[in-house]
Length: 158
Image (cartoon, rainbow, N blue to C red; front, side, top):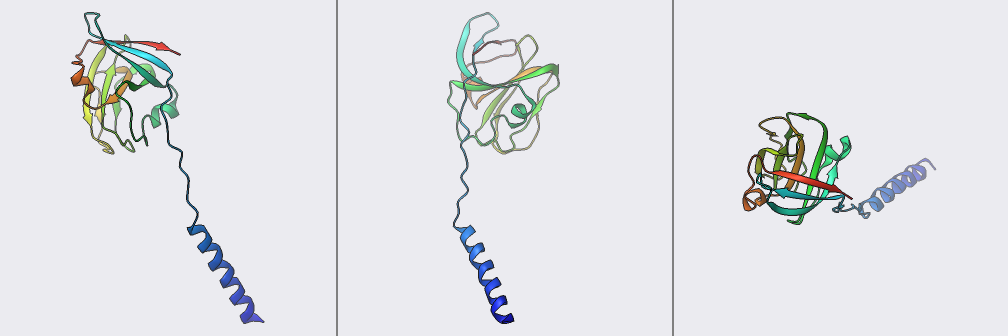
C-alpha cells in the first residue's frame, strides 16, 4: 500500500509539472495612446512638425516610458512632464527602439539633446542643464528636423 501511495504521488507531481510546460504566457503588446498634439518650432517661430504624443505625467508613466515597445511612428513621440525643473538623466533599460531624447526647460525651450540612444543600454543620458519636460522621438529625427538649442514646443492636450 505504501509503494502504491508513493507511486501515486510521484505520478500526480509529474503530470501536473508536465501540463504547465504546455501553457503559454500571453503578453499584451503596449500600444501608442494619443493624449495630445505637440508642435515643434524653430526659435524664430517657424513650425517644424506636429506630432501625436503620449504623455508621461505620473511617476509610474515616467518610470516606464517607452519600455517594451517594438516600434513607434515618426509622427509620434512621448512627452515626459515633471512637476519641477531639475537636472534629468534618462537611460534605455528595457527600451527596444533607438531614440532621440530632447530636454526642455519650464518654458518648453530645448536646452539639451541625447541623440541616437542605444536600445537596452543602461548608461545615463543626462541633460546639460535642468529640464522640466523631456520629449522622446525615434532616433535621427532631431537631426532630420535640424533641431537646435532654443527651439521649442507647444502642447495641446486632448
